[in-house]
Length: 315
Image (cartoon, rainbow, N blue to C red; front, side, top):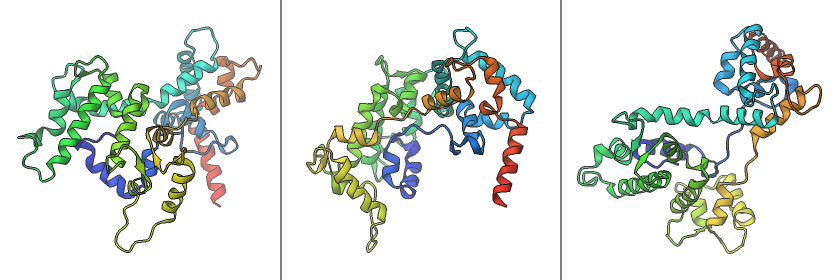
């Protein structure tokens, strides 16, 4: 959603490859791309519990090393140090591990924009880094200068919205809200506003069926509509336009692109406790977790076993 010069080329490439309804809807990603089927292995649980990158690291360890590292992790999860891992503690841990991809994205851009290395990013730093090469006389040398003016104005509006204290200097948390506004409640109204502006081509403050489809599909001359476009026409009438007035207003767009979320981290915490809580007191001891260590983390041994199963299935 970051409509800046730095991401324009990427957005164009994505728009050519992916139907727009897949890009617009902001779902929190599932915890793993692996199937959640314990009978076929615990890789989903490993990636949910550790994060995808850390799970790969554990796959290279011996069972002894893996269990030793897991024991230390259990101590970190037990926030109140009472010797038990509760559902809320496990839920918090899993959500924290899964949010790391956002922080990694922020870290990737941070040094680029923090030009004076003061640990903050001002609007001037962001503007100069993103648009500085083209800023002479307000993009006068560019053929599509009006597009760049709109992009800069939109970035400035989002930056000011993310900047809670209004000093035009973003802390790391504020810059995270700028890059990932869908993750912050106080930014979600702006996400809806930006979406409406993108699709509402005639500027009447609502989205008709032609605009809705036009955001997803622009046929070449003589090209017939794919089946998924016809399906989206039905979705507009049957599901998106809830008041049946022929348009999508801001409330209906909210229900479309920011739907109620399944809390995958909550479900995974419940699953892990249910499967490993041997005394059924609805909390886990370190002993219970280590007794089921291969559900929480992997190792060379468990990875080898999964490889054998995969080869057997292929045969």
